[in-house]
Image (cartoon, rainbow, N blue to C red; front, top):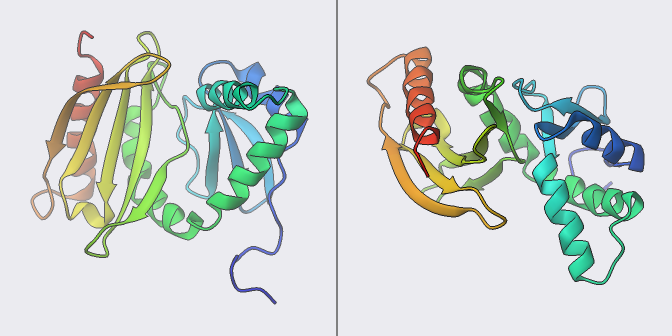
Length: 206
């Protein structure tokens, strides 16, 4: 038995999943539900359960289609589903860490996500030089397209970094804010503080 992947069932994204994501519009996300072991499209204006792994957002689907065309491949739903299947299974490597961080940021996500802000992409996860896990979530303002990349560390032991990017085919970083709150506030206060900073950053007139 291989020990390289902790899941016996591989993830499969289907053309139907692609169609369902499109039907949800701009704020849709494609997720893998660990408990049910299936892929489904969900509204990005509600925080996903921590047991759901985000594969891509609607904007990511658009960029993937462009990449396929640049490679000379037809951007059909079959091709998109094939590439997203590969992407999703690659993400399983980081899923245990992402799932743990999902639990930490769930209250923050719930404080931010709504009709005006949605999760735009799968989070990125890494282990820092000092061994501290950190994860970045990507929030987008509905009516402006402005994006905030919010990087938190495990237990918020390092300052949370908020990078604001102006809208465009290639997001352009225009501002950065840090919030240091470790050991000062209770968890719900930390989440409210970070959420207020993200909201303010996304309201910048770019």
